[in-house]
Image (cartoon, rainbow over all chains, first blue to last red; front, side, top):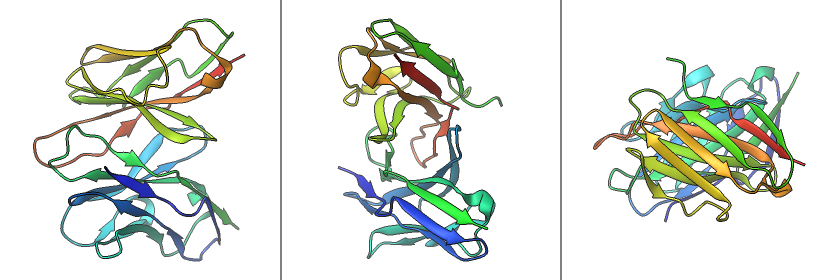
Amino acid sequence: AQSVAQPEDQVNVAEGNPLTVKCTYSVSGNPYLFWYVQYPNRGLQFLLKYITGDNLVKGSYGFEAEFNKSQTSFHLKKPSALVSDSALYFCAVRDGPHAAGNKLTFGGGTRVLVKP
Amino acid sequence: DAGVIQSPRHEVTEMGQEVTLRCKPISGHNSLFWYRQTMMRGLELLIYFNNNVPIDDSGMPEDRFSAKMPNASFSTLKIQPSEPRDSAVYFCASSLRLRTGINGYTFGSGTRLTVV
């Protein structure tokens, strides 16, 4: 079974400071990993994904994430946070190319609050 | 591309009434997912379809919930009879499932359901 954990319900950061949102996962094979962002009263929007290759993945809005196989982590990062980055962030995992279906498992979400 | 289209955006209904939520996936996508989002439970997968066929409905909470996908461009989620605890935001998402590779999901804007 695949699972994903986001240990922090909320992250507070001052504008201009680095932002990190943590995610750890569990799969039986090689993981496919995703980050999504949800702004108020909106659906989830795709930020970035890791399938294979370079462990550092760059995505939308200046975000990046680092895949760490030994720590089974896929933390989301942004070097300099903006107030407009305040939103709900979801990490998701799928258990490799041989998993049945196309099912992603989502974490519980982390609310990010960037203060001016 | 208009994205994933859900209707209605908001629905307020009385307990015991039938509620039907609608979703039009992105043209060409062959996987469709229904999620429910609440403060208490976060994002829950209710059911998903591949090529219009239900693959996993283990997340459907009760027999009061049913979902159909009569063709590749339309799906419904029905609750009959509705109860106050069904109040949530319901999201539809679609994806292109390939034999190799992986694509993330595209989410609709959601239907906010309030059962009074």
